Image (cartoon, rainbow, N blue to C red; front, side, top):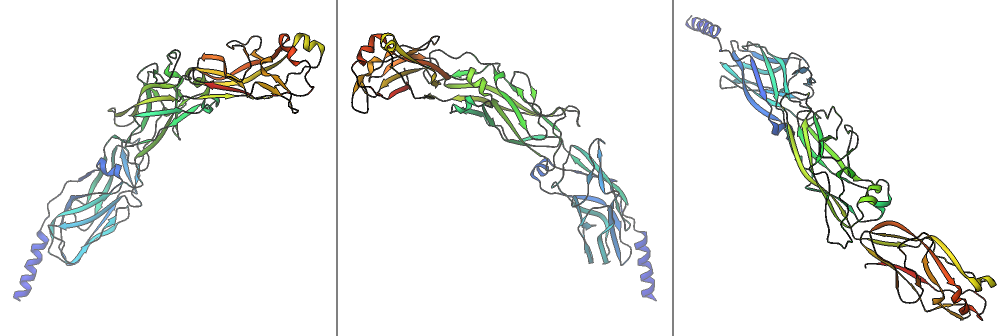
Amino acid sequence: MLKKRLYTALSVIFCCFTAGKANAQLTISLPEANISGQTDYKVNINTGASPFLSLISAINANAGAASLSPTPSTLAPVLLAPNLINMKITSIGGSIGVLGGTTQIVLSNTPQNIYYVLLALLSGTILVDYTVSSVGVAWAAGSYATTLTLTGGVNPASQTLTIVIPAYVTLNTLIPATTALNVNSFAFFRNSAGISAPINNDYFTTVPTQISLRATSSVFSFTTTQPYNQLPATNNVSLMSALLTGAYSGPAINLSAADQLLTTSTGIPVQIGNKDVLTPALSISGANLSSNFVQAGTYSAPVVYTVAKTASSFPATPISKTMNSTAQVNVSNMMELVVPDPNVTLTVSTTANYQQGVTTTKPGHIKVSSTVPYNVTVKASSNFLSSAGGAQIPVGVITIEGMTGQTGIQPIVLSSAPQVIISSANPVIDRLLNLQYRIPATQTSNLLNKTAGSYSTTVTYSIVAP
């Protein structure tokens, strides 16, 4: 009888125990480092209190919906599946109990067992590990909430679980300090697309963003260690364009001292993984290169890229980061001379030819390109034009000069020594020289009494520094 009375008394004591209440608000502030680093965030929180009054007890947990509801409401809900929030009870009243244990669950709107016990004298505060994932989520700044329900006598039985996401833009891979457009081939001048330099950068963010670009000067500065006749004209930065590639690219812009958007006006929404990778490119067309960047040297313009939260997005506070860089056009010292049609024939076959001389015109005979001042020289391979039979005619019978209307050509009498026909000319791209080869009447006497046939020599044109 004594045992029975004692057992009855203990039952009364158990039934009369009342656990203290916890707050009905459970708030988890997800750190920027975990969002950007794509790592799980674990926090241990007081999630109510529980009296265990029987020998067999259990706690089940479930969310009120399959997704977290956002604030502000303009944000997208975040699905709990597949592995957004994990829960595990770490202690009840400072212990776990005997013949029982905890189960880690992935929170969903379906009730799941999170704690069971066969024998325990546990009561008091329930501490729970919440593990929040950033993988596969586009966490946008704001808060995301659901109703968390715990059965098994937990007090309070329903609580609001809220995930708070900070608003930030954090630069990761920066725009390089110098973006170089290295003009080291004449092909860049001849190609309508000119030259372009892509730039890779990325940043982490929880807000929609826009990318803008501006120059800090309206003109390029110029420096050179190469020869020049005069410094090139000051070039406006608008000769350079910029374009962002990708789904959120705006139209190409011409640089100016004002900020201009590289993205669409609506900007780039928050991406899964909270990382944006951007590839802007700076370009100069072939026409602009040929007109304004021919002189060898370095043309520089400081520029500023700005990554900013779109004005209409949450929160109202502006958020922006800037990156300073210098756009550089580096033109190498290059020279090129091409003879598109190398065959020249002077035919002397009539009395009039001997009386008046003969002339052969060669429009566009020589094409010259140079990024520094240049001379053009010409010489014959020997002092004579020779026939197959060994007969010879002095090369001095031939004069090389500019055709009618061609300027800048110094006439020369051909010899085996190099002679300058263009002297210290300004840099140029694809300058065509209209030349003529002439045997004047004063030289036709050197052709008399020569064996009929073809006489030839090799004429070499060279482009050289003055």
